Image (cartoon, rainbow, N blue to C red; front, side, top):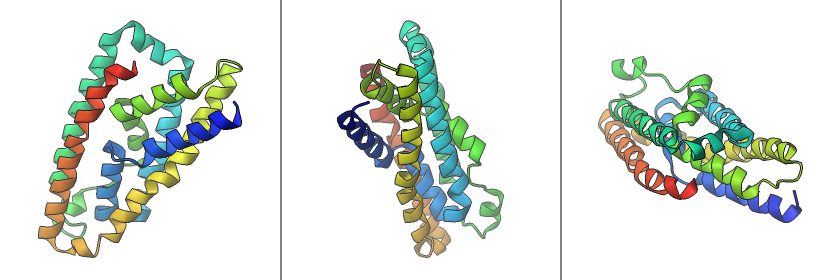
Length: 204
């Protein structure tokens, strides 16, 4: 991989990681509801899940979807349904110290990693990384490099959203304000589905 291509990929990884999407919306909400420390497993799980997804696409899973587009369409709808469920859970979250909030828990490391496999934006990021930035020479070595770099760029970049959420905790101490915030985050999560699903066909 040339230095120019490496710099271009790092820019791609940064932009796709820091811009709004399902992961960052959930991290913002989790930071606000549970704080930075309790959201760390969620953040690390996203990075690991995305790295494994990039590896899987590089190993040929992306070609399977190209050959059988129905499978990819099914994945999009399963992911959309799960995101709607998560939006409902966020909208109905209570304050961390309330009886309702006490029952709520942030995503675990494994839950966050597994979620990437039904996250449409994560698929767009993984397919874009492999098809656009991975040279054919020494392909497998470059796939490993791309996957590792994506995880390294992704985790600290999206932590901005978690930190922003945690800084809002004092402002969100009122149950009414927190309720409004959570409903707003749920609506943003639902809204994030539209551009992702509309653009998927152009990626494959």
